[in-house]
Length: 382
Image 1 (cartoon, rainbow, N blue to C red):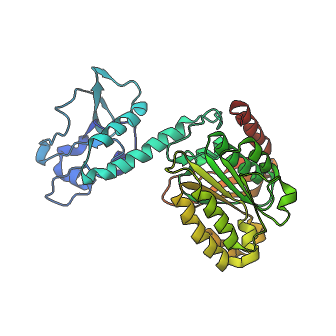
Image 2 (image 1 turned 60 degrees about the horizontal axis):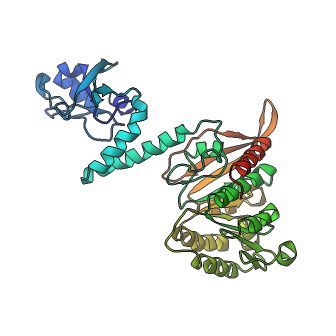
Image 3 (image 1 turned 135 degrees about the vertical axis):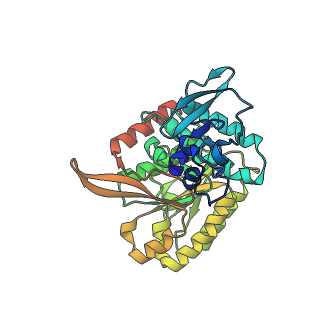
């Protein structure tokens, strides 16, 4: 019974449920997990917007909000629910009202014990926002995204993440070299540029990203770690050319210098794509690479960056790969899998520390990724 009450069944914050089995004090105590001779009140533990009225001995009621608001009632599998009425009318859609009621409640309550409910309310708002994006919606059609999250630009992946990558997180994108991986990175970068976010890209070969340096000169910064950088791109104020990945100190100094030139205070979300992780790991092995990352990540986080680090798992021994993955707060994994339609690419969220996410796998279709990027360009040109 206790587990049923914890589930979100569309109740509002001030709804009250009278448990049928409360005729017997002992049955209620057992159902609520209370010890003998204890008043069985189930009012705490953030019961998913459902407020249960605790019963005293032999049917004596302990009312909470019952006298303050009008109610209508309906029966459920475990008792009678008194549903609150607003402005003389019962809310037509209880699920849509949950977010509003929770927001009102979180601002009104101030006690230390209520902070638990505020955390739960925040999770519910994220859930509602994630569910609000229908499957046909693209990042271009919903540019605002979910508060507290940074959109990847691929709507289906953002849905798995319940709105996008959590702000200030550093997430590893583990994927073999393939078109789908490059399209995910491209979507991540271009989405940031279109939203006017400061976007850093640290890479050995810039590829198509070079065009962003000209189209979005003000907020896109490209760092090329390649001795042939001069022949790859023109010299621009938002392009930093480095000699390679051999000198990690040089890379760190260049990044720190660019970060210090950014506007303060933070006006918008910032995003960073680390495209040299595998190159650094090959060159410097696990110990030095991990030391470099553990110094870089806190600096990016303190500057307001949400970071995506690209790693090719097929290039590294198992122990070195996992020594590096332990540094990141999340991991998005792209892999190949045989299906009825043949060999295909799939993506799955493997971890996202202290965050909720959908554990389902998503089939990555190259054509879908390309079409979504094209739709985003038409809707929000650079």
